[in-house]
Length: 367
Ligand SMILES: Cc1cc2nc3c(=O)[nH]c(=O)nc-3n(C[C@H](O)[C@H](O)[C@H](O)COP(=O)(O)OP(=O)(O)OC[C@H]3O[C@@H](n4cnc5c(N)ncnc54)[C@H](O)[C@@H]3O)c2cc1C
Image 1: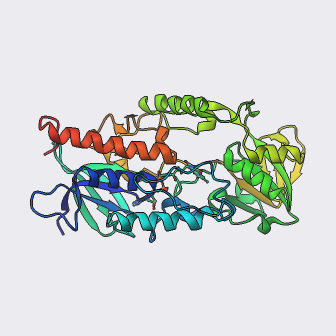
Image 2 (image 1 turned 120 degrees about the vertical axis):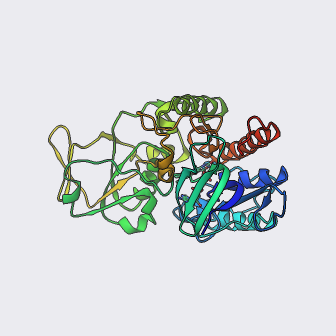
Image 3 (image 1 turned 60 degrees about the vertical axis):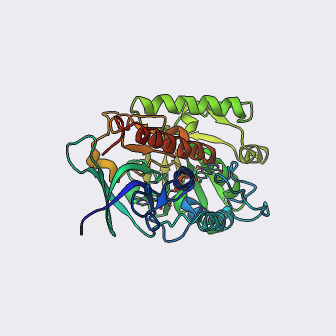
């Protein structure tokens, strides 16, 4: 079957993708199912079978009160929610209502397998190939997040471990570890939240590669702005976005303070090898473990963009203001500096603004 022509394909219906869809609609684009004749059109493709982006998969103890702060989707407030409610219940319901209210007609489950250039014409179309047909788009807005790319570093002996290894993406509840010895790896917000939580029911042993640089101030607005500017500079140069922590150092979160006050915020250096029943430390001592929890972050889910050959030698894609510098028909939002709910919202708006500006200036517009 021939690819279906459409002006804009949005890949992903999380915060970033829905923000882009909202702004497309505000600027006069219609979902492809309702577009006729000369209407400008878009389609949102999402791999999940239900609305909610990554929120539907997050662990239950990530409550509305314990998320880092959720920014509402554009044009529709998050309904008041019990702070004790699980974000994975509240937010997917909110996303579903949002899609319905604005009639965004998200196509799901549709997995995008690849994005490639239709031909050598730089003003030609991008082919978006999925498990349910193909689209020929003038622009692609990639909003695929990171949840599907949990990052597991490799350590020698990993495959010999007889206990359980899991990534935070697979974490369900601390109850699974009651009475066990749990090694927690990582220095991010998730590591600290789960260290605090698991240490109530299990013996925890926390390891990080580098000694955390604790910053006494809370993670306030100037600190956030500085962090975002740091990540922005990285992606402009084509470096992998990296975590916010890598740019800012560690800020005190409520969980870090709780763990500290209970005496469980005790950092150890990273182990050197993994053995059948535990981990070997750099000084040669052995630490027994029943579980290793990798709180080692996520990478951008962009493998489907590989045919565009945009990866730099450093492993990233050169992106400025949400647009791929080496492929102006492609936007990456919720990527790098816009990897937050507020950043995703803004990036959606800015991507659409740039597309509209291109189309208004035919010398810039893709055919
Ligand atoms: C544990 C955790 C907690 C967080 N808490 C906060 C917080 O409190 N506040 C905050 O601002 N940020 C938080 N973040 C950052 C958060 O990821 C973003 O704020 C936001 O939810 C990401 O939205 P997104 O649209 O970029 O991605 P997602 O919500 O991940 O949506 C991406 C969508 O793309 C789809 N997709 C992926 N690949 C494909 C494909 N090949 N084809 C089709 N569809 C595809 C997925 O199915 C998914 O629906 C947190 C992140 C993590 C990991």
